[in-house]
Amino acid sequence: MRRKTSPIWHPFTQHALQPDMVKIERGEGAYLYAADGRRIIDAIASWWVVTHGHCHPAIVRAIQKQAERLNQIIFAGHTHEPAERVASALLKLTPPGLDYVFFSDSGSTSVEVALKMALGYWRNIGESRSRIVVMQHSYHGDTIGAMSVGARGVFNAAYGPLLFDVATVPFPSGGQEQTTLDALEVACRDKPAAFIVEPLILGAGGMLMYQPWVLKEMKRICEQAGVWFIADEVMTGWGRTGTLFACEQADVVPDIACYSKGLTGGALPLAVTLCRNEIFDAHFSHDRSRTFFHSSSYTANPIACAAAKANLDLWSDPATLGRVASVAAMQEKALAPFRSDERFKDVRRVGTIAALDLDVRDSGYLAGIGPKLLAFFGSRNLLVRPLGNTIYVMPPYCVTQADLDEIYAAIEDAANLH
Ligand code: PLP
Image 1 (cartoon, helix red, strand yellow):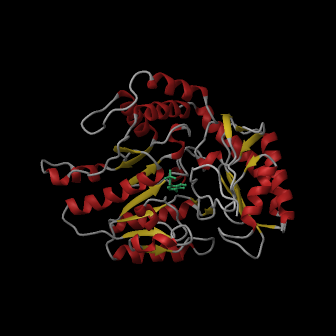
Image 2 (cartoon, protein in one colour):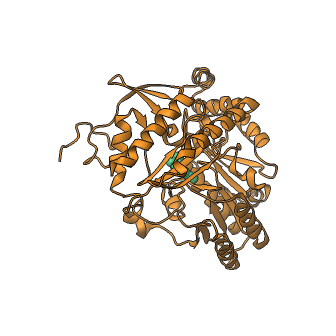
Image 3 (cartoon, protein in one colour):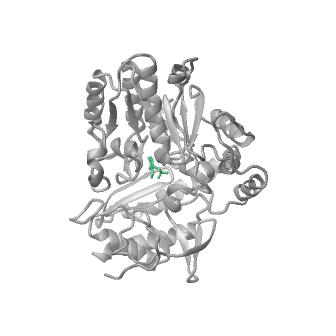
């Protein structure tokens, strides 16, 4: 085994199998420029965060301007213009009913905040509720709480003893939706604190998609049972599913919503958890023990907020959703030949996200084909990072037809690898 020379320990990386990292020097639009001179197409928006393209000029300018003025300030007891502007712009873009904005730094922390808001509400109104209902195959992040509400498996086997118990409803695969809804109804009878779900598509769980009417029904069940409905839109937000937020397609207003990744257009880490009045009000008191006890040093960092505001301005231009629609159409067209190719199965798409599974015997995240696929796409100068035998394409919205042609030609060739 060749030891690596750099002292850096990379995320989700088995260094014994992948000793050398791809060194990137510059990003522009849908492209990454490597130190060895290669131009790489970013087909996964750098872990689903880059929406308008790398180094979008409006976002870069906003960051530069803010960095010269105020780059950090404790957010307890203080506020600043970029955060105020982001919060009010967000509340204009999100459905009425979401009234308060809590800032944090990543998708995982936005989920921790959501869970803590739900439990804080029940405690503060004097009801003892702590159980969380989750969906099979979900992924909500890698902090302990976020892992607890995510699927148990290879990602978190070592930390199992630290994870709390949850009630799990089955994934609503086509034809099995009623089983999910019945299970949710049963789980809600035990008076859980909340149900958390990825709307319309489960990302890291394998790009598993389900119908908007199921989401709507799940919300109805939670509402009837008085269980908070948490929408984790960390991946699905910012146009990914074709609408600005996935919940819109089901006409669902979540009680608590988590947004991150594309919140800054993918330029800086930032997240928000939005909630209803009632949840804020349950914490609003002269009694200091009812405070919402959550913070991180960089909560609502002004530079990240300035980037987020620039991103929100881009979304206020209807041309941005128009761009999303054209990426969705290009993706659908690109997928068409694969639908009749028997080397692939479950060819699927929601909005700008396309996914298909290589029909191999050994499937799942640790499928033997995974590392081979990764190396193969790398050799074609593509950033495509399959989830086991599931190949997906989730590009920045500035991707061109020519880029997609290159990506899908490589996917076709990848079928011959095994
Ligand atoms: N929730 C969902 C649905 C995600 O897909 C992810 C990350 O992929 C997270 C939460 C965690 O976000 P982060 O990696 O920013 O902590």
